[in-house]
Image (cartoon, rainbow, N blue to C red):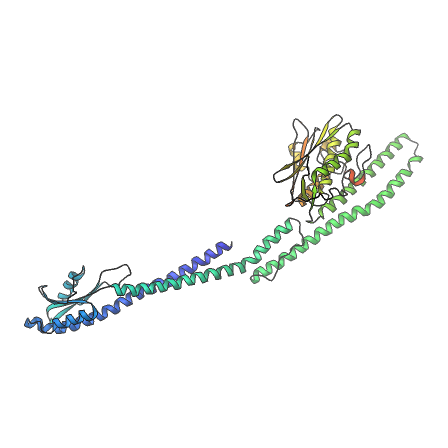
Length: 497
């Protein structure tokens, strides 16, 4: 943008300079030529007055001496010719030029003539002046003066160079002024663009300085800051509401479950006992949904704080944590990793929680005898963690909906889960500057890949790599049998989205 503005200013200035200096340059050349021409015409007229008696009496007299003195003093050749074009007398340096014949024709017809009209720096022909010699209305001959144009060309060239220098200085000053003006105008726009990217990347506290640039852009910056404040406030209120509502609902939900449990001993009807058990299961499911909402609210509130973690160590710890549940469900849970650390730059606990959600679903929906493999490798300048299962997988249309909140595949609506796990994974990966990609496995199953950027510098010693993730067994400690409480059924390893 700045380059285009400067080019526009520069083009306008060049056009203005051309419009002003071109006529001035032509005027200077014409004025210098007219000054010399006027002097030569005056000299030729004086010589013509002296040449009249000489031509009439056929006696040169003092005319030859005048021409010689004139030539010696000014270095300008002159000649006197009669009506028959015979040279009566001439100075020592007199030489006819290309325009002499035409000038004599005009002078012998009784008119004064001078050529050319203007002397340009590239014109080398001399200035020719011819004046008729009259005697009582009769043309007896003509006086011709040829003036070298070198001095005129030097003068015109000097003027033109001066104009060019002034133009160049004006252009340089204009360019500097244009850069300053463009910077003054575009500085708020540039800062607005940078702040917009910062906000899009998660820094909701970034704001534009509203005292830069023209008044219109200052008003725009102020309006943008007001809009950013309003949007940030709305998002904070929304997330706070979700967190507070989820937290406040846990107490009455816990009380409700206790009351439902107390009803158990008083039920004697078998059908009532079944309904009682179903009610308890529904309260457990509601507790799981509340836990997932709390986790999602915390994940979305995560700012741009990044930490460096060893993805190999994190993956090993999460596979070890989920191994008892996988073994209980007869699912082979394996780890394929590097023999050295693979560092990644993420928000705190992002890899922990993402792997918990993905492994949870992969184990849950793979079924007895299937396999779940967690792989850690380097790719594209970062670290990739892949969770591959051999379960039923997802269709192409279901993959597009998998990260939507509360979405679950139609065939698993009755399976425990809240449908928020992949949403949490997507939020954490995005906040870390990474990527989440899912695709069908071969020959069946689902492959979920997490890519995280590598740190600029590798730490000398690995920092703590595991925190207290809000999803999966590390959050609540899964039992040896049965699913974990927080985020159950919310990962990306199978159709339980």
